[in-house]
Image (cartoon, rainbow over all chains, first blue to last red; front, side, top):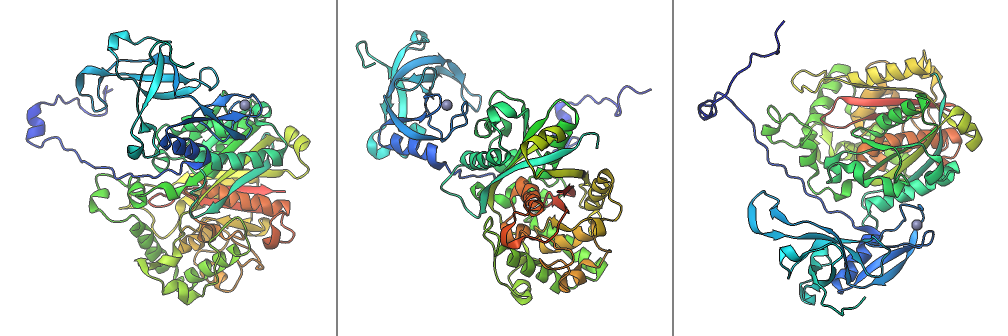
Length: 172
Length: 383
Ligand SMILES: [Zn+2]
């Protein structure tokens, strides 16, 4: 019995150059405009105003950020928005030496998750860290948002340019 | 079936052409809260498994099942997403209960079609990339070609396709869930702008947003939850070939096979006399006629005249799409089959309001997965 349905063929570069092996290409045209809804819209509007806001669950009392219109633990609607600080603590981070189109870079991007002050423990937002030597980044480090100038804000998570280390004696 | 399964709760977020004020998650939450209240259950305690139907290309998010649990109360619970229509999801949910391992299963489907900016290109993703996509034609032409062949093979008059639209959008006028209700004439429909001839604009369902959630339960649990369980008597599904070059253009073979499977599992010998009404995929007007014939609810070539004579009207001998169907309620992507099923449930509960049919005991819902597919699923429900 044959091992494979088709005879094994070893391909060389020449086979592609001479058109012995063919392929078809297709460029996707997939564009979307997601309605952000009640919870996320409020968060984005507050970002534009240079503020962070969370939503509080009436069941477990967690202050959730980013805010959402229901608590995934209690399955209850959340109707109270709570102002938060723009400071927090690094939960985890990585030093990323490849861009998302896989180009190697010398200075790493530093994605972080920040537990935001005023939100429940472990609740925070994901962003990038700047103004720091990569070697100096540590879990538990205190950080603060660096906001874009008000006129450049567009109600987007990028209205925060990045987070930077919080100087000693900063707010908490 | 070995174990009886019933639908014991339904909920929805109304079907609207645009829904800019809420996110898809909030839409699903709205439908879920209503379904759980209807079934009298707490999803954090009483549900054994959750099923969602969704297509990543329609969501704009891959591995979409990751984004489902929170708004259904399914966090930390067994759940999975299938890429199929809502009735395929219903089949999956029923099978889970039939295993004996799950007593209560929640099923969800939704559409945020208004958030897709390049819909024909998304539809085109379903076409063969080597043979068909390079022709760079809007996939609606596939419906035009199918309609052409169906009309030629059966001798169905164009007026009958127009009448399907007049009927369904008329039914939608008295259905508060939907918003494409309209008083039209056959001429309005047939003289509207050509889309892919013989298909005109008013013969094509517009897209709609919305969500449907259903709670299913095994017989012994269902009886403790509700006095009006709606029993799932039979389900069937099938696919024809994807080849456009050699499919049976005139007839909906998938609908025939899905129907036969559903009838067999439900023990139905004579569908026309044993079923009282149907909600049948009508994303294009001719589809309602083609599907009626394939499902054996009338003889081949007979659906057009039957429709023109009023047999499928709200007060006809066999009402079809009392909800208004997709023409009257919008094409809801993978939620389409659940929109059809929801109406069957409401009718069988006697809760269909102004459009309530009299003395109905058994109804059929059938969905098609839309162009360019040759796939569909059928479910038979009884009260
Ligand atoms: Zn909570």
